[in-house]
Structure formats: structure tokens, C-alpha cells
Length: 101
Image 1: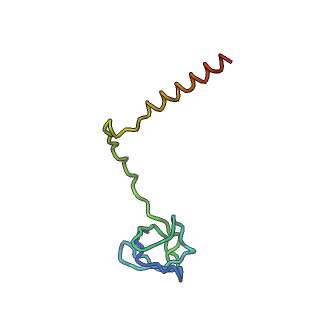
Image 2: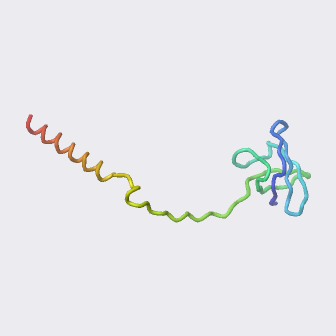
């Protein structure tokens, strides 16, 4: 079944889920199988057993599309070419210094 956690008490480790039809079902932390800790407003998928919600998971959500990457203006880009040029020059100097010794 699909539902939403309407309350969860951390001290008692128990909460209530409201299903799609408006019915309310108790659950406890032992039956929680989701990511993180349960909390109010969280959409969940669960099974009913003896009137209690068990096997409570976070509801599956549709995969989201990646956002479009906005290119940075040239003045905001890091000066990586200058760094590579300087590193290359340092390597050449070290190699030439090694040949003279």
C-alpha cells in the first residue's frame, strides 16, 4: 500500500501512517525499512499485517532528469591553462638542470 507518515514519536519509536483511502495504521521502528529515520510528511510504501503497517519503505519516486549545465563566462573560469603551462615549464627546467649535472 501507499501512504504518508502523519506522525512519529522518536521517544516511543512509534508512528502512524495514513493510506490512500484515509485509513490510519500504526507502525514502529522495528517495521521501518526505509532510508534514514521516519518523519511526518514522508511518502511510504508498506504492507498491512494484523492491522499494523510492516515492511515500511520510502515510496519510490520517479527518476529525475539532470539539470542543464550553464556554462560560465570566460572571466569566471579558473585559470587552469596558466597553471599547466607553469607546471610544464618547471618540469622542463628540472630536466635540463639534471642533464647539466
